[in-house]
Length: 255
Image 1 (cartoon, rainbow, N blue to C red):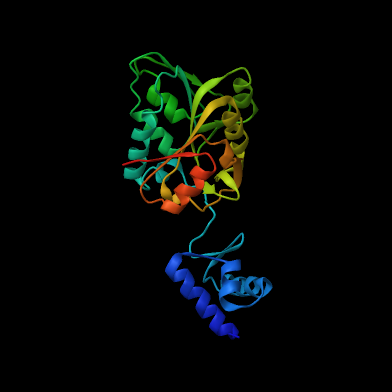
Image 2 (cartoon, helix red, strand yellow):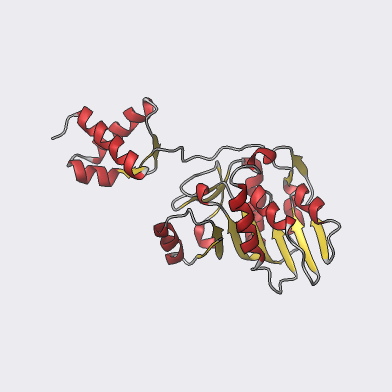
């Protein structure tokens, strides 16, 4: 039987090696109860040595926090541009698409130059401004209160505009992709509109770089079962890709 100090050293070593640990795994390896492991994880979290997660612990914070859109645009910019280029290939013959708010989906708007008529519906002011004078693009701006951090419309007016619409494709950005919690964003006020956009679209395409996996924003916008495609970068583990595809999600790795 390991002492409490030995257990804590073992847990921290496992975290250093793999980044995450599970209660069941630690319980089996150290032959102690899950209750004991939960107490150990809490003590280690109290010392700021790890973050507790549902069913285990993580060396990195699993919760996503909102940053201003201009600041977010500088984070993993290369990956976002590659993801946007891959997303562009999915538009095909669709005559209408939804583009949510967010820096990765904005990259899609920036490179969108359709050769045939395309209607773009969006709550994002930056997306609408980018596309407003683009040849072959008709923009429908969803209205409502504009949030400064995201430059996006929110609220019941924007949601009501979607009530009478049907749309071929939704390109949605997220702050978290978690196998238990689903898709999430880091601001509650935009949650309802994102849920509505997912319900409106016939095909849902999630654009998320690999740093978003295993994280949770405060607002859940949908389950993994609602996704048709998920486009990410090469940093996502093969195991994660396999788990997603087993759940019916087509994963595309941007190169």
